[in-house]
Image (cartoon, rainbow, N blue to C red):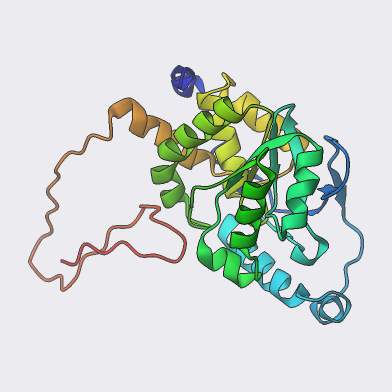
Length: 277
């Protein structure tokens, strides 16, 4: 990891940039599975059909609607993922792709056609179960092919704190696989808009030598997404400080408190930090 010194040079504007402008809807028309290599990302903002109409038109569209709603609430930006439209992805670098999840063994062949040698999956079992993805069939087919490797390094969806804790181990594994297998590496979560771009950006920052801001700009130019920059910065600080811990003492007056909760700690989507005092 040869680029950690850049962290201290980064201006703080990107970490708070989401709050500086109002989120706008994004419908991302990306490279669909089976297309040839392309870096093009198109943004469409035309009229959209209702959830009921989508459900009637596409099987599983109701699940996509629910997932998109949850993702929008968690990310603080209006994001849309249409699982029923199949796998989508973008080349970020010539040997690095960020995309949505593989849905069947046939997607493995589509990736092999564009030179992918490593499939790096960040999904957890509940993510796979929600959309009915048979990860075992995908893994078994990769083993049969012998020229592509499938690896899972789970990170909890919508959870910046878990991402922070997992990044060092995840990037270490990603580096070893990419170095050993060569070719193109495909990083994916479910929608390819949160965890996967965050891992790709950390890899670009820690391993490939990109300045964090420059890497983020490149990522956004190829695939508009919402990686948690603060989680990457904090994970970098964790590495630099050796994950050292210091004991602190909290005091409050009058002894009238029945419980104490600490605010300001991002410990994950939908979770609370309670010291149990």
